[in-house]
Amino acid sequence: MATKKTVKAGNKPKAAKKQVANSADWLEQAHVLTEALPFMQRYDRKTVVIKYGGHAMGDDHLSELFARDVVLLKQSGINPVIVHGGGPQIASMLERLNIKSKFQNGLRVTDAQTIEVVEMVLAGAINKQIVTALNQAGGRAVGLSGKDADMIVAKKTRTSKKDPSSNLDKAVNLGFVGTPTKINTEVLDVMLKSDLIPVVAPIATSAAGQTLNVNADTAAGALAAALGAERLLMLTDIRGVQDKNGNLIETLTTRKAATLIRNGTAQGGMIPKLQTAIDAVKDGVNATAILDGRVPHAILLELFTELGAGTLVH
Image (tube, rainbow, N blue to C red):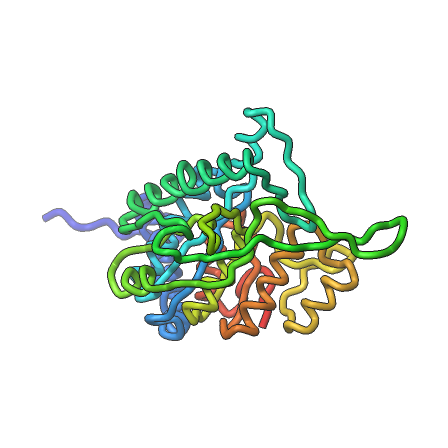
């Protein structure tokens, strides 16, 4: 009768070693899932507004991971709402059309010619690319803009810049740039009760019917407040809010965040991000996280781990 050979410890066949390694990986995955359970329960049936933007949108691999993560949120009982930007893509199209871009206080100056390009890129190509990625990941995404059902009604943004010669504030005309004045959530409310995932381009309409370009961070914050979102997640191209020495600030109160704007620590595009975080929290959003969208699974790390990711404004 044939007998089984005894395998000495440390001399296991390659297949057996691989099986042991795989078992360890599976146990680790199971451990991660059990650790995430309390966080999943915390956000169950809650709304999370995600501002998706930055150069991560142009990376095919990161875009695929983002889509899978959002679909996972929906399957976990969380209601994600995506509000996307598209600064690099808009800049690329404007350059191709020989239209120069200007910025004031981190906001794009938008003339009549530019607003047509902005709407075409945001509500057209980018919106549908995100919708397609989510659908391919197993979700059911629907593309919208703030003009649909008057979701975002806005007025022209008024801002100012200090004149270095006189040290006085001087009015700056941003053109067709809008600040939300009214948010109508009826369409989103219906969608969030279903298995649909809304993807919103930050194009608004004024009371007079003008098309206005709303900063994506600002639009996301306004929608998050109107929806009573549990979290507003803002994906960007840096680790989060940094101090003057370039060190990451992990948590901020709204008061400290406002101080960073006043003392000049926050500059450029971080100014509207921080202001949006402050306004959203003051208007009822539980907390806002400013995350590095270039980090794989940044959304899941923020929501489902104790450590989180980026900077949390509360």
